[in-house]
Every structure is written in structure tokens, then in C-alpha cells.
Length: 230
Image (cartoon, rainbow, N blue to C red; front, side, top):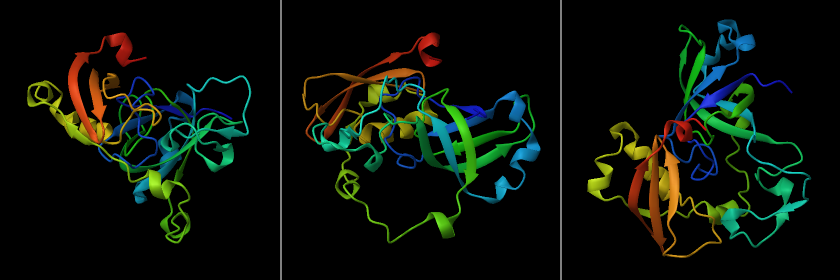
């Protein structure tokens, strides 16, 4: 398959990215087409839709072979399920699927058209295979069964981000980082209250600990330019 473009986001690394699209509406990105597909005619009519599907490449999932079963992190990393019953990145074909909000289409400019989207769950630089409009009457199934996600979707954390640290964080990214942290970025099988984790987001490495349902930010370090554009 041909890669048609890439997405620009505030996540230079995988850790901390929400496990599904739409969980954190404050997370934004820019879909920039590669030169061959940088044609305004290709997105004519897309502005009529509020949401779009992104088909993309799990570019950071390295594997030599595929496995019939995987261990979903939200199930504690101990229970195995069939790979086709999960959205694990370790699949026979490294294809991801995300439903994101289409906030704006910038037609003019050096890289136009550029799609401004929100509710993303993608790392900076992720290759995009395809874009399709989200169609409510056919894509929405209110009576669908949730499977094991009926339980795992409920888990969120209370976030304590000390004011003296938060005031140094970019103001327009504060609500987004708070929402990202509330989703509990840790692997579910790690429950050490003294362990310090770090989420790289919007130019900072945010250090935190988790004790039961309380996440406490303990430090933040400004990322180098190389780390920001990894």
C-alpha cells in the first residue's frame, strides 16, 4: 500500500498515547499529505463531514513474526486473547484505524491541503495510508456489544498536577496533558506506587507516580529538539 501522508502530533514517543481515538478530545494533530497527494481536489466535499477515519501504519511496532494471541495491557497483561479480538499493534498487517474529528481543512499554504483533527491517538510522524469520511447512519451501531471493553473503559485516575509545575506548562496544552494522565498511561500489570514514569508531550517529559487511583506529577523536564521530533 502507498503512504499518502503523515500526521503531526505532540507525542514524540508511544508511551502515554491514549489506547483509542476520541478518548481525549483535546489532543490535536495535522495530517500533511505527501507531495504526490497534495491536491485540493482530493479532499473536495470532505468539509461536509465532522469526523473521518484514518487508516495508518503501526510504524513503531517491530516484530519478526505474528502471534495468534496477545496480552491486552488493559487486562493486566496476563490474560491472552486472539489477536483479531483486540486492537493490539502486533498484528499480521501493521494497520491502525482511528476515528477523529475533522476540525478544519487548510487548503492554501505551502503544504495544503492540511487536515486539522482532534481526538487523536497517534504518535508524531505516523504514516497515513488512507482517509475516509465517517458516516453516522452506517458506521454507528448503538446496539453493538462491547465485549471485555465494557469493564476496561471505566478506569480513569484523579490527577494531582502541582500548581507550581503546571504554571510552567504551555497554557494551551494543560487540559490535554491532564486528560492524557487521567487515562492512566502505565502498563496495567505494573502497580508499584514508588515507580516514576514519564510521558513526553508538547515539548516536556512529565514525571509522575500512581498510588491506587491518584496520579501525582512530581517533575517535568523540557525536551531537547531531537526528542521533540523523534
